Structure formats: structure tokens, C-alpha cells
Image (tube, rainbow, N blue to C red):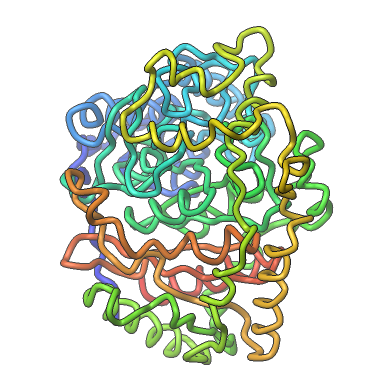
Length: 507
């Protein structure tokens, strides 16, 4: 099957058609790539200011009345673009992400914009510095153009509804959800409000929204990327990372944000494990000779939407056509692994206490459950908040009774991880695949009732393994669906290789 290119409903953009002129002129930023934008700036066909202004114009024209993906716009975006234009004119060295307008989820600390985590209780919280990933992309001359809406406290994988900025819709169908919790980033990128975005993923929240919005999103190995300065949901599962339209763009941003960070102790395990250049793995023939296992436990014929099932079968046929050997089914008892006790820890209250302490004197509160007294929360999160009332806020989970160890010391999670690696070794497979969702995006007004088929929760978060989702087609003509590829620890280079080959071979 050749995948038909389906565009978001907002693709009918502000026209950039301009009469030919000798000087710089605006370019069409709709579905632009990093390479296209940077080439246009370096060649003098446009300026960084014109690029940033084009995205700002799209946000102003379309966001509030349709998608509601954007929370706040960076007031310094144009002045930063002017600085980059000056550097281009002076022939100065530029960072790898120069003039890339990036959308950043509202749980990443930004020193120049509020960071609410989707909660009205943090509506005026201005962190003293940037999250590690935000700092890194800025060091490489990217421009944080705006922050994006999210599910309140990142509690919901189903929908993106916050008490601080309300409800985000799916850019491909405004009556559908973009999933959660990074739905604002996903819909914002799909609607070309930014070139690429940053999201976070505790169980689903990069890969799920990416699947629902025809994007590429990667959840890294636990330990390869830093979560410093990202409002936590569960620190022993949280991952932050890029979400974009193409595998190459995501790999380019991943180059910048992956790596050791002394402020995140988990990255000690990943010290010196990041590749020098993930784009070096991008090979259009990368599926030739690869052995790909199919995790059939995640494609239940009774629970999988028939349209998604057909798309997934077509994806397997495409991978075989592109040279892969498909091992179907991959022999692994997933349900036995998921029945292990002790793999999940309700540590949100403790992790939030640590985060709020990191804000210092500007922290708006010292304890997240204060919102239950003030009433500053959406009704749908009340139960989740109250479920943490009996958990101590200032005692590390490893010291609870019974204890809840961190990921690297959690025996059930490490056993799940090891058993899956062993099964892959026995089957001699390079990676395992399954649909990111086995259902189409739910309707906004029935987000809870229609929530089903969220496969992203079931393997990667508990095992700490890397997984990437890449568009595999559209159900019912216009609703995106994603193919998820899971690898061994620190095998992100291979995941990029396989995803790129599939993307280039199917379009």
C-alpha cells in the first residue's frame, strides 16, 4: 500500500504566494521541514524574522478559534529571530537548530513564559530558569515560539484538557481528541503553529498524540534523556522528547536533547550512551534484512478497530516489501508480564514536592494537594489528586512501607525488561512492532467513553525501553494512525533507521 497524504483541516494556510523579487520574501511554512527553513534563510530567499512571523500569523489566525493548542506566545520570538538574521549576515557560526520555531509543552520550565502544568494553580508560575531540554535547544539557536496546552498535571492519556487553558482539539478533526497529555504540542505541530515540538511521556503522552496527529514521536530509553525542569507525573517513568512531522526532523532535535545531565540522576546510566549523530542512521534501505517481530497481544482482533487492523496489516506488508523479514507472531507472553505486582508507584505528590522546591522562593505553593483546598482544579482530576492524599510528600518512595523503588532498583520492572530482551534475542528480532492505538481518536464529548486501544502504556514505560511512533496511514479517510516500533535499551539509532526506511518507502 502507498499511504495517501492526508493533511490537517487547517492546512489551507495563509497564502505565501509572492511576486518574484530580488530580496527576501516570506515562504510557505505549512508542513515545512527544518532543512527547508534553514536552506531558505541561508540562501537569502527569506529571513528568520519572516519565518517566525509566518508561524505567529498562523497562531493568531487559527488557534483560538479552532484547535486551542497554544497557551502563551513567546514575546521575545521576533527579537531572537532578528539576532539570528544578524548572525547570518555576519557569517557567524550558527547552532544546529538555528531559526527552528519550536513549540514546548506547558510542563517544561521556561524562564520567559509561565509554566502551568495544565493547572490554574500555577497560572502565574514563572520558573527561574529553563528545563534542560529547553536550554539545549536554545543553545543551538532554536526559537521557542510558544508553549502548548496539556492534560491537567499530565493525568490524562485520553484528552488534552487543562484548568489553565481549557480544551485542545485534533487538528485533523476538530470534533476529536488529540489524545493526552501532549495534545497541544501534537495539534500545534500538525497545524503548523511551530515547525516541531517538545512533549513528555509517562505512559503514552508523546507517542499517543503523535499517532493521533500523523507525527513522529520518540520515547527514549530511561537514562538517555534528562527530565530536569519538567513538571513530573511519575519521575521513575517520565520521559521528555521531540514530536515532529518527519523522522529526520525528530532525529535532528534528538541529537540536541539526548545526553547526560548531572541534574537528572537517571542519566548516569546513559552516560556516554548517546550517539554522536542520530541522523547518520537514516537510511532509506534500512529495513532490508531487518527482522521485525509482531506483538500480536497488542492487536486483539475483538478489540481492534477494523480500519486500524487493515492499516496495520498493510504496514507489515510494506515493511516486507521494503526488505524486512516479518516474525508474526513474536513469541512473548505480554499478559504474564503485565500481571507483575509492584511495577507502578503513586509518587506524584512526592515528585511534585521536589519540583516545587526547585522553583525556590517563586514557587506558588509547596505542596500540590493544596489545590484540593483552593478548588483550583478541573473536576475530572479530583479523584486522581485525592488518590495521593495518603502518600507522604517529603519521603522518597523507596523509604515507604512497603517501599516503591526507583526504576533501576525495581525488581519487577527489571525482570519485565530482561524477559523481553531475552525473548527478542531468542527470536533474533531487531525490533518489535504494533499499532500505537488500535482505535481512532475519540470524540471530544465522549473522550472517556471512547477511550480504548492505547498500546503505548503497555510495554515501553514499565520496561524503560525506547519506542518510536511513525505515521502508517489514516482510518476512515482522515484520522491518523501510528505504527510503533520498540527496540532494545539505547537502540534509538536503530529505531530511527527503521522508522525512516518505512517513512521513505511509503510516504
